[in-house]
Figure 1 (cartoon, rainbow, N blue to C red):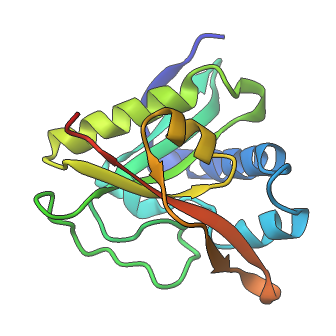
Figure 2 (cartoon, rainbow, N blue to C red):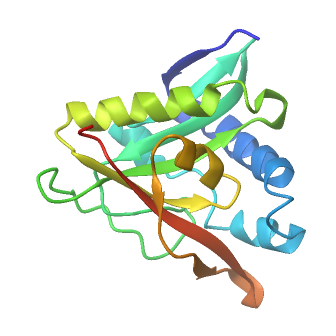
Figure 3 (cartoon, one colour):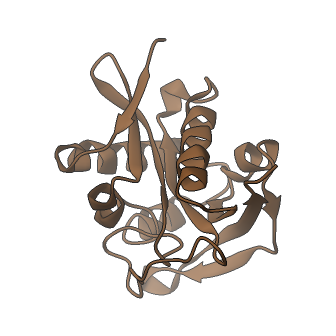
Length: 179
């Protein structure tokens, strides 16, 4: 399978949303219930168009189809798509704050082929280029394995409230970008 990584555009929004749903429904099924996944797709999972506007969100294409997406941010919002309330677009200070690693999803048919790792390495390099010395994220349970293998240290699991009284578990993770 050949693929290439590129900057996401506004025109990719629909395909990104479809990829996110396809990815979490298949790859998250061992860690989350169907109700949790569907509830999280209403806000906790989804495209944050601010990342696209900032030029910090990327997609991976193979044969004209999106098979991966992910980004980083210099803004305070830690996770969640456009539908999530409580977002904070304030800029971070790279001297004191950690860059945010955001919204990584891979097509189930392309999983475990280096796409997530390539996206992560690219985002870390971009964050370093912008002066950040640390990165942090709110990882999904299926994502923890990838991030831990790439040097991220997990914190205590947190429960995030969803719609209809549901909740979902995430794992805060962080890493030094100076090593």
